[in-house]
Length: 462
Image 1: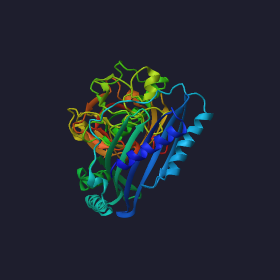
Image 2: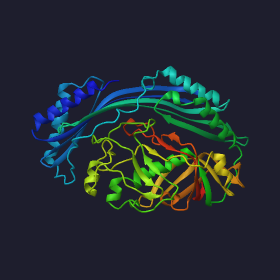
Image 3: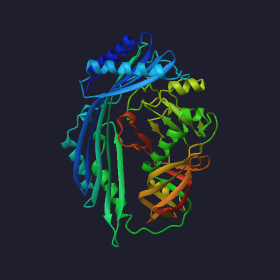
Image 4: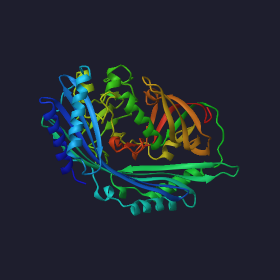
């Protein structure tokens, strides 16, 4: 995968904008991506798909009016008339739209420190390679029924604008995400989950993941019912990544902060002093582009510094509204939504392993995974959701018995508040909590966490 053809295609788009509307401001994203999935269920592969395509995303500002248009084409098939039509549609839309007072103008500078984390073998992994990964996961599950996905993806992206700024990058990503299922004597099943996301497929040990999933499943065979209430919890990386994803989307989103829809207040000690939260696109493990949808070069950013809220994340548009500078967090098509941090990382602490964290708990719960999470109050991030794929009682420092899945209703703002984050595990684990979209490729690195309180409000039925 190369970016030379994409760079040339971007220049053709801008040339058509200049021809159609001389003096217009415009920028374009040219993205060529390949997404390959090998899915398995009942310990057998049932689907292998690969999709490759090129997309064009164009923004044009004419006489203070902003419009966008997009086009998807087959690789190397962007005909001249299609490019011309794209530019003409965007310019024509400007003529009927109101003036855009929030147009921030185009970025004019920014030098990439690197062109992205990219692994050629991962980008071009053959179906047989993914099949071998699946086989290793199934073998690691030691006879339990296994299901999940092995994914490899790659993206080449070029940003260019009429102000003369151009940047290009390459990225690769791989994920193995699977469950092992054990049959319960009285009917039904117990599931265990294990997942990992990495730049390089060879950095993932699928057999170890399969063994972890199987161990969780067999440890969940005879769950007991537990009364709702507030419990001290140890949440594993999969559950912790879900919490951080929603914090990034709703709390640290610059648009939400600008409009008063977020609890985030830069400069205030809103979190436990033990918590530092980074957005770190410069890490060698970061997945995704080294620049954002506005063409702004990404840099490492501290969001929470020892419990003190440091900053929100901004695109050029939300930064202009706030009287600040872009932090490089615009997402494709996200002008109205805001900005998202896609490289969140909690540095490891001194808490040790999950067993070490549990050893300090007198009466609590070990949570493997959250799902079906819905936000009830965006400002305080009160959410509701369910546990799944493993929930266990912790008593006197020992993980004792499995518990039936519980519903929770919890403010994520309070969960990490002062005094509530009791310990941070030692080894961050890279998890992708957002599915399989290459445009918002996301790897959240977080260790297991021990929290003083989590509000469980009922069983899985309500």
